[in-house]
Image (cartoon, rainbow, N blue to C red):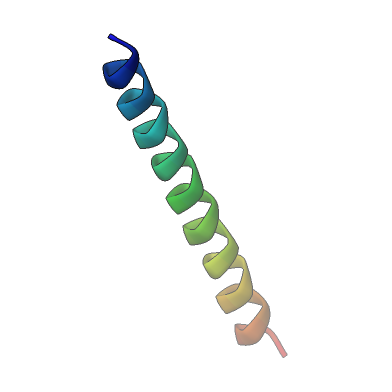
Length: 35
C-alpha cells in the first residue's frame, strides 16, 4: 500500500516537473525569438 502511494506521488512529481521544464523552455525560446 505504501509503495503504491509512493509510486503515485513519484509519478505526479515527475509530471509536474516535466510540465514546469517544458513551460520554462518555451519561455526561453520565446525570449530568444524576440529582438
